[in-house]
Image (tube, rainbow, N blue to C red):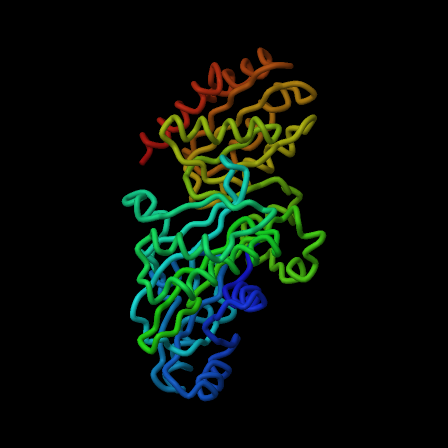
Length: 380
């Protein structure tokens, strides 16, 4: 579950991590009032569940309370990657000398939390990992003991963080590991960890992802959920009964039956040179009407340029799948390619129906994935 920056900072402060103070405003007038309370230049930060706020104009500055109000009026209501900004965090502007990165992530390979430190903070850590992985120091955390402060200090030193920051930064990293485990998080980041001109070391920004599977015992954090804001398209899908719809970032819509096949299909699309825009688990025994509904829903995502339907027929029959695809055709965007892969029960009958309707189908999953990727590229 995603939470906002101000909420993440609230969690970190409970573990003794010094954070940049701030207050939330929902109107420009509130922002002006908060700026007067701080009495210094402030930063207006959009509170939305996506990254890249700064590049989108969601972080602005106000040297006076009046400028803070004007900045908030520009940010509130802004559309950032499909999310409308409904509140901003007003924080005093820091005089930052240097920035670093601290993070804890749940690592699938080691099946344990992994601590990460980089002296190159304040930028996209994925970019650092891709272009200069040697700048990131990693260490697997033993969940029985957490991350002792001496190990955390050692990591900062190995990453090249200045000695003046190592002691305070090490304590913060050790506390970050405690916060990670205490919140049942999948990710906890301080980026940047700021060294100010006057010698303070504190979290200028923070991000925490709480594991959805732990929300039953993380009742306070579960109460913070804003599903309609976390992802409006997924929320709309849930409201329409398409609960297993997941939004991604590419241009290929994916429908499959069963979570495993859906994941394999997403991987095959990527392996074929495409990028999945979303996927929907069709489930077992579903009827043509549901497939039509799912196809139309996926197609209304402006990112989707083509759809791959990959069904292994068991309870679900191939004829039902083919009928659903044919039913959807008149209402799909003009020229949008749809490729169907059918295997199992009703395979031959379904393929014959698709062929009669002039629709494309794949011999197997790889063939179907390559066909939809090629069709999208040819239309681009």
